[in-house]
Image (cartoon, rainbow, N blue to C red):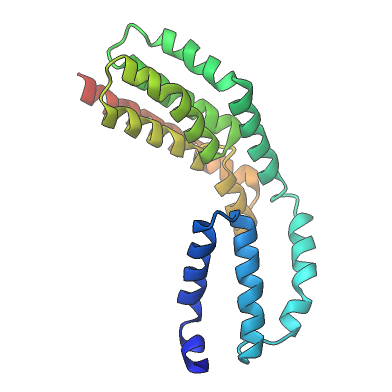
Length: 207
């Protein structure tokens, strides 16, 4: 049994994570519980040393005092405010009226608003949820194909990964030892190009 646990520690951790998530536990608590549980198991099996757990508090407070990573919860909170306040819905309605006369105008509006939400929140979940709840019923009501509507919403939501202020870029800057400003400067042009490519694809589909 001991040899089985030692040889299959990683698959067992993954299976335990899946079980925790299926039971509805929050991801943060599930990851923490599994990490600590298997850490103690590793000590019992002789794979880890108890000294590693002694460095755990220092590691936690070190992350909390990291000026770069402190931006992550604030951007997440800003995305939640945009979603709950209705500002994202007002933005979509305004842009939709602007692109209204154009064939496939709602699809262009979703892409444009997705880019704006990405530039204000940097949170993929906030962008996709906001766009899905707001724009999908409207696009289906106006006769848009379900595949095109869902594809445009999902694609525009992922722009938050690359268009500043992206949380992914913040984490990458911390890991690579680069400034967040340099990461943003390098990502803004590819983000705009990706937005333009999405619009070109919609143009080709709707023509």
